Figure 1 (spheres, rainbow, N blue to C red):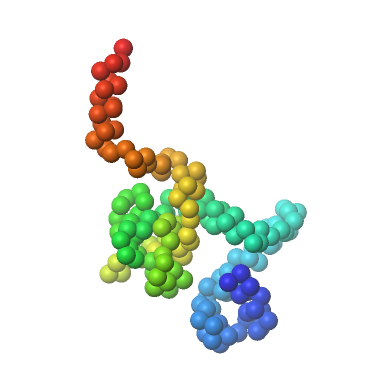
Figure 2 (figure 1 turned 60 degrees about the horizontal axis):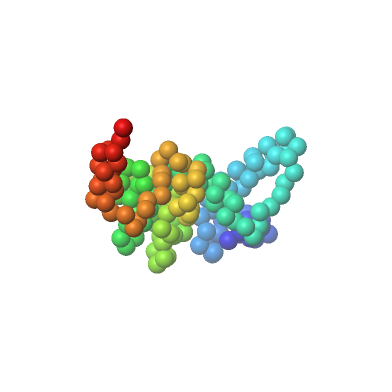
Length: 163
């Protein structure tokens, strides 16, 4: 996937090449435009261009840092729930994850599109610990070995012994 823009360039950015390879030409054009803007910013700020390849987790974590507030976790088969609101949402049919068979446990997304269902568009798989690290106000790690009842009992017990 990382070599797709170079291959597209070799074929003179032709739309029919995208169609032959099941790629969304508008998405590739937008990516090329954004890349061009980013290169111009780096040049203006005199920041050298470097690559993180093959450690693409760096890019996913950067995306997560911008979109942690738009996160969802997998619930059931193919369905997701918004991590903050609990509202159900689904991967958009144009997503690379859609119909893959093994959907990621956690994703961040750019926007929700409401039709018959709420669809997440531009979803990226993320690690749950990144959400905790980057959005600690919204997320925390749950101790799965402790039940809610046990937690409440401990709170009541500690209140009794408070001075």
